[in-house]
Each structure stands twice: as C-alpha cells, then as structure tokens.
Image 1 (cartoon, rainbow, N blue to C red):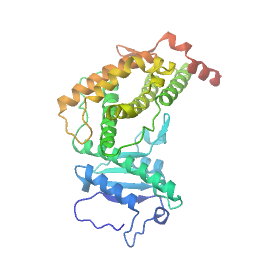
Image 2: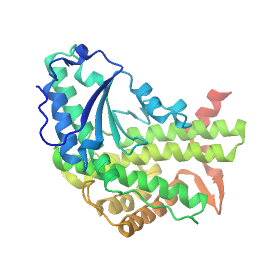
Image 3: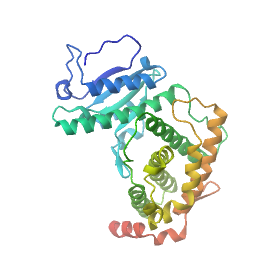
Image 4: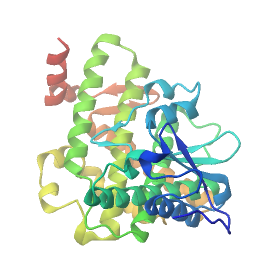
Length: 331
C-alpha cells in the first residue's frame, strides 16, 4: 500500500525499528496493508487526525519513557499489567498533539501468514481502542477535579475517571469490531490482583510507609478495575459472549473479590456512551462521582479502607492466603 494523502490523516512514525523488518519502504512510501488500515482507522475516529501520530516502535518501553521524560512514572514503566500486557498506549504531547504507540512486532516480516493475520487483527483492535482515547482527549472528556477535593476523594475520582475512559474506549472498539469472544478472564484478573495485594501488604510490614501502601494498593486495584471495565464492555455489548459466565459467578474468588460490587460497577458503566460521543462536564462528573463511591466500597471489600484521610488494612485481611504466602516468601 502506498500512502496518497488527500484528507487530513495521522502521521506515521517508525521508532527504534528497521523499516525493512516491518515491511516499510521509506523511499517509495510503501507500507503494509495492516499498518495502513491502522492509520486510516485512527484518522476516522480521531477528532483532529492531523494532530495525531501512529508510532510503530521496536522498543515500546523506551518510546514511553522518552515521552514521559522526567516524570516519576518513567523509571517504573513496564509492559506487565496485572494478568495482561500493554498492547498500545495513547500519549499526549506538550504541544497538544497525541502519539499512539503500537508494537512493531504486530507487523514483523518474520511472521508466517497465519501469525501475520492474527497479529494484524490485534493491531487493528488495539488502534481502534486507542483511537477512542484520542477522540475523548480531543473532545475534552476528562473529569474536572474540584479544587477543594480531599486527597482520599481525589484518589477515587481519578481512578473512576480512568476506568470510565477505558470502558468508553473498549465499548467504542466493540461497536466497530465484532470479536468472537473476550480475551480477558475475570478470574485471571482477580487472581493477579490478589497476589499483588498480598505482596504490597507484606512489603508494608517492613517499610511502614502508609502513603506508599495506599499508592501501591490503589495502583494494583486500578489495573484490575480497568480490565474489569473491558469485561463490562464485552458483557454489555453482547451478553451471550460475556466472559462473566455462570462458572465465574459461582467461583469462590469471584464471590470473595467482586460479587458485592460487580452489578453496580457494570450498571454505571453501561449507562455511559462510547468514546466518540461527547458528554457534558456535569454528565461526566455525575458518572465519575457515582463510580468513585462504588470503588470505595469495593476497596473495603478487598480489605482496605479509608477512615477520614487515614488508610487502613482490615484485620481480617491478615488471614488472606496470598498475604500469608507473600509473607512467607519475604522471610
């Protein structure tokens, strides 16, 4: 495919990758059909496509860190996210433009035809999801945090805003691309969360830094809740293909870690339009604040609770199997 730009389109950038290994010829402008399809879809979904770049990178972590610069998150960034891996990332730039990062491996010329088709499908789905993040960013769909909001409430509304963003992006992707089934397992997500909570709580027994504990617990939960938002989108779009099966609902892990909050979590998200829709700030605030309260209750069910501005661990949590295992590993 040769690029012949007539209407505004996103730019395409290759970073930390030899063009020949992803089927790109810089001199002729020829790129693989799958890559061109990604550029087209990103342009169609974006509000201002001329302010967007698709960055195909051979070193995803380095590309993210380069854009984060001196931000504290740069040093700790990796591809692991709970039970899954980062496939794409939307990164706003200082000049107001937006980069959408995608792994170069999706377009590797070393793949056989079957692998190439599967990788192309995943690349397209990833870009469509990220493109909805772009649309929301360009439509100013983020929650406006009140200046007088407490630290506790800011933690929950920030998480809720992020989860809603992920739900709307995935709901948007699901309305454009029909998947045979969800790639996410609710039990895998909860198992990974339980292990992470056990590890961070065990480490707290040594460092005794409450703010660090609150941050690490919140981060672990947010990673899981974002994926639960993807699962909610799949459940809402096509309940017959929902990953929340009878077997999941009756599983002790689900009963212990999700059953009390799932229905309310799903209900709030189901009432929010996909990413290309433009919501008013009052509409966004109402949904964010409603979801924040659900997250607060969900966190308490997991064994962690805010009392005023104090962050505490419920005493019963210290009998948790993953906490006990983490303590044993630590010693």
